Amino acid sequence: MLQLPYSQNFDKFSKFFLVFIVLFTFSTVSKAQRYLDLDGSFIYVCIETQSPVPKELVSYEADETIEAIIHDILDKTHKKQNFEIINADLPAIGTLIDKTGKKYLLYNSAYFNGIDDATLRTNLIAHAIGHLINSHRHQLPFSEDEEMDADEYAGYALRSIGVPPTALMNLLNAIQKRFPNNKISPKEHLEAIQRGFNKADAALRNAEHASYYENNVNDILKNFPRFQFPVPKQSADCSLKDWFKGYQNLEQVDNRLSKALFDAGYRSKRYFQVPGGFAVVTRVEQYDQKSCTPKSEQVRWNSKIVREDSFSISSYVKSFLFPEVGYFRLFVFVVTNQPITSKGEAIKRETAEAWLNDGANGLPDLIKQMPFTSSTDVFSLVYEFRVRDTNKEAILIPSSCQGYTHLNNARIIQCLNQR
Image 1 (spheres, rainbow, N blue to C red):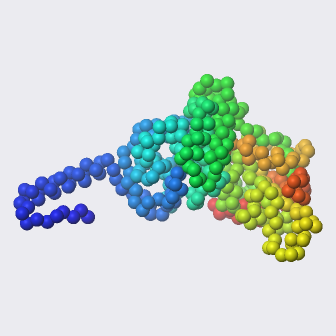
Image 2 (image 1 turned 45 degrees about the vertical axis):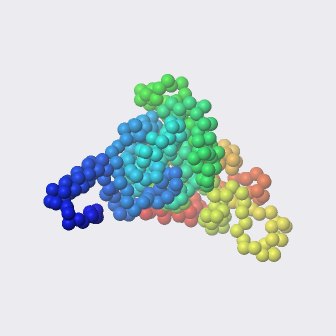
Image 3 (image 1 turned 180 degrees about the horizontal axis):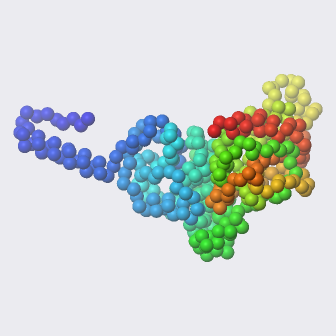
């Protein structure tokens, strides 16, 4: 509440004049800014500081230049806007999800107008969009996988809007200067951006303009990564078709499958096309071969064998006498209206790990719109590898568990049941 100094010497005209000035000031400000009326329970992340939302946020009139960049990124990457855009008084740029699930992209126009480097400015905006279109859950801090997803989308966006390859090295220098204490090194950020950049470059190859694809939609699929079909020889498998009865298209299947994987802890996944549909590949994880459950989070995603035994003299001696054996696996979910068969030699773990780099971070609309019919199956493949020593080659092995057991003990079945 505004407190005015009291003076008995104020005459009626002076008091009227002061009240008029105050009311005029407030009415003028209210046209340019307003307090955000957002649902009280929400999750927010400032992309630069990774800090939670202030208790109160004020919104301002839209900045046409910044919002034009946002719409250009969405248009050139063929993504639909699934969030509201607001110019607000946060430190930099951030994303917000309220308790109803509504998404927001919040940006501070003064912050961006102070950035002279156009590539850095576009990269920061595209990175935020990447978090939203990939439906990241905004758990603080963002996981490394989610950061890499957002970076990869940013790289894809940079190339799609015409940023030249020579600008990437300057971007690395700008990231090092602006984010010196980030938990992910600038080099790792740039590598993820480069991956997305290269994928967009491949998609745009032999095309002078992005609009080329509007008249040549088949070229989108021509450049979309392909999964081996017939599929590589698997360790175990399981059909999940019964979980998707009544679905109309492949986008609905992807949405439910993606939510289940995320809730089960599989935050990184990549997409490929297969005849009549698509495939989703998860990240390689360490698991307990007897129970078919994932290892603890501390070692689950480690690419090297990690002994989980508590320290003792016997375990110490055992580590010298007997080489540690590690078990690794990944899931591939194939959604297609074609018969699924497997053939060929057993794949190596290095090949399976490369899938996460070679795939795309989302499906094109052309695949999303494919109908889900009675002949469409959702088929899970499990690839298991045994390593007798960290430096020895991994061997693909037949599974000691059924495919359903793998899915159930990895909590994927449980999460599929939670619609």
